[in-house]
Length: 298
View (cartoon, rainbow, N blue to C red):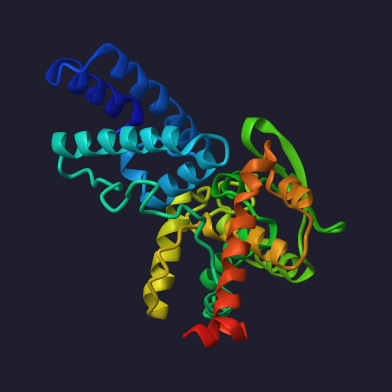
């Protein structure tokens, strides 16, 4: 179901069936408009494609620019929207069931630790499909790409000689992101040896599947979940987690916040600052584990 159609069902429910006040309806409309704009920016157009990771990412961004009370209201609006849809059609899963208020939940980006990231990439073999899949995830991690940016990448955006990729981000804003030599070698292997066999329709997109169609965001999610199952792990991560890991790893290795902002294509540095909270959390865990005073208190 298209988000626009679902929104009309929701408006009918709260305005006619529940007879909600005009002020409450206006508040819901304002909050949901921002939520829907975010979903559109990451290429989500149907309610079936929405999962809790996307909602967490949206809430995380809002917490960097709004008061907690305002974000709490937005969470209520989002939960009301999805629960109404579920009651209307129970084949539509409610992704907000385990999403709680801000007081109960710490909305920090989910990312790979080094052990799980290494295990993930080491699990790929040398088949065409494995090289294709590994190149997809390697590029997302190496360059901090949004999934929508990855799927829209065209051949003329990649410069193998200078090891740069030109990214067309939100609002058609361009940014140049360097690519590590190892990642470029893997990408080149896919482009030179596999893509010509896949690209039956002569598309300009870098990533096309074996049928000759452009890579989709949904397919990336399916492959990630399949890999988790294969490895026997349940990380509850999304494709966007590679972007989170990219930013967290850069900051953990002393990258400047402004540099990370530019590489991610964030318009506002407050959006990037969420990753400093992640690193602070890592510091506290290290402190609790190793500091003699903390051990003594136990």
